[in-house]
Image (cartoon, rainbow over all chains, first blue to last red; front, side, top):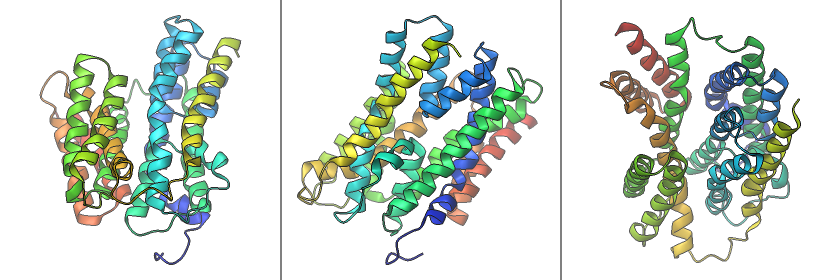
Length: 235
Length: 104
């Protein structure tokens, strides 16, 4: 694939392979945890089908099982997903002025953290933006998330209890994927952005909450880009 | 299926979709190159991914010496530098982490 040709749906599916590998075990763990905490397999699957945001789904389990009021739980989960407002403009900025987004209402549903990271990584490597590519990338990730949840819910709570090493290895898949995605878009100009984002995440998580830490890290890192990337190309 | 779980999923799902889609409609073509908003958006990607890595790795730092975290992270770095493959690096990191736990 060169920078002159538009990436296809199949290109998107293939680019989604690492996300598929990363999502499946996490979604499996979600399905196991959900049924282990009293949700039916259908309820576990519905959370993945409709919300489709991993961290928020795990938090939803905690809120539902703790008996939190519906509106409190909804507000908490919405606040947790607020970071997603940054992804679309960042992606379109990188895609350039000619990028089509006629069907964005559909593929944007799948613009998760990892899909955003993978798409950005491809653009950083010189690939053009295309909607079929976004559909392929998003569908691969979504299918993996749904099938993992279904299998985990079917296996039931405690399915991995006899395999602690496997459970630990699967659990580390997500940090490993984020680190690999970070390496794929890394450049010297972005090091201050990354350092500030990581530092803010640690501090705010330690002194406030994990959700606040994620929002603080993203905003602090982006603001560091405003201050530190003057006259340099950040992408 | 309990109605409150379906309602919760629908409310959160609708907002999440709106967060992902509506900002995509913004017309960024007239943003001045090198302007503040351009720089903010250009830095958002690396900042977001660095944040998510940090947030997902932080729980592994609690308790005793995080040797599995160190070796798992090292495996990701080594395989990515050698192959430039996101797939390979992710798998190596997971395997490195699991093997370290198995051996210790």
